[in-house]
Amino acid sequence: METTLSVRLLDHTPDPLRTMYVAFRTCYSSLTPQQIWDRIEEGKISREKMTSFILEKLQTGHASPRQQIWFTFAVSGIDRSCSHQLVRHHVGITFDQQSQRYVTYKDGAYPYIVPDTWRRAGLAEDLEQSFRDTGSLYNKAVEAGIPGEDARCVLPNATSTNLVFTVNFEEILHIADQRLCWRSQWQIRRFWAKVRGELMQRFPELAVLVQPKCGEHRLGYCDEEPKEWARCPLGKVRPHKKQILEYLKSQGKASAITEENLQKAVENRGDEASPEETLSAVSSQ
Image 1 (tube, one colour):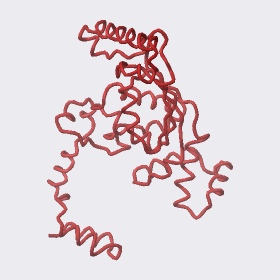
Image 2 (cartoon, rainbow, N blue to C red; image 1 turned 180 degrees about the horizontal axis):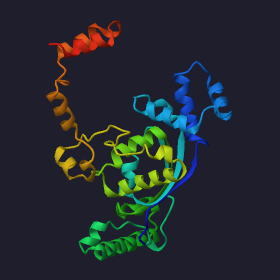
Image 3 (cartoon, rainbow, N blue to C red; image 1 turned 45 degrees about the vertical axis):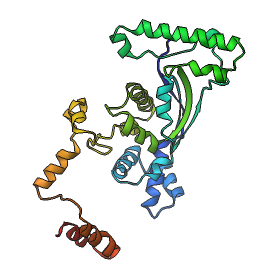
Image 4 (tube, one colour; image 1 turned 120 degrees about the vertical axis):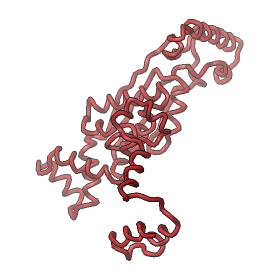
C-alpha cells in the first residue's frame, strides 16, 4: 500500500523564544538569568524585542543558545532511503524508528513510496507490481518460519517507515542548510519543508530563520558548483560565492591568505594587536 508523507510537531520547549532569548541575553548582560526572566514576566521585555535581539545574535557564530530549545516531531510516510539520510545528522538530534525486526507485515502488505519520477516515466504500475511480488516472497518467508529480522532482507529502500525524533533548534537550522537546498533529494527536502511548516504554525518568528544555506539568515550565498547554482530557482535571487569574491577582489577588498599573512595575523600578533593592526597585517604584502 502506498503511503503519503505526514509530519506533526508533538512537543517543544514551553516557550522557545523566551528560553533562547534568556540564554543569549545572559551572555551579554550584568543581570542574572533569573532577573532577565522576571523582566519578561513583568512585561518589561516584549516579544518583539526578544525577536530582534535573537536575529542580531543569529548573524554571529554564537550557537549554544540555539541548542537550549528543543522540538519533538512525529513523521510517517517516508521511505527507508529518506530515513537513512535523516540519521546521518546525529548532533543535537535523537531518533526512535519503527523496527522491521519486531514489526512483521501481515500477509506481506508492507507500506511503500512511489516517486513521481516513476509515474512520469509511465512505470509506476511496474514498480508497484515488483513491490507486490516482494511482499509475496516476504510473506512466504515468514510463513516458512524465517524470523522477521531475516525476512526483511527482501524489502526495498522504498519501504515506508515511521519515526519520532527530538531535535534542538541549532540542528534544525543545520539540517535545513543541507536538506532545503534545491540539490538535495526530493523526499527529504519535502520532509524538512514540512518540519518548517509545523514550526511556522506555532512559532513563525523562529520558522522564518529555517532556510537553505543560501538564505539571508544563514550562510547568505550558494557554495555549490556554479552550474548547479545556475540551475537552481533560488539562484535568481541569491548570489554565488564566486560572484561575491570576484566583486570584492575587483574592489581591492579581498585576496588570498598567504602563509606570511597568517603568521603575522594569527601566530605572531594574536590578542596583542588591535583590529586595525590585524587587518593591516593581513592585507599587507
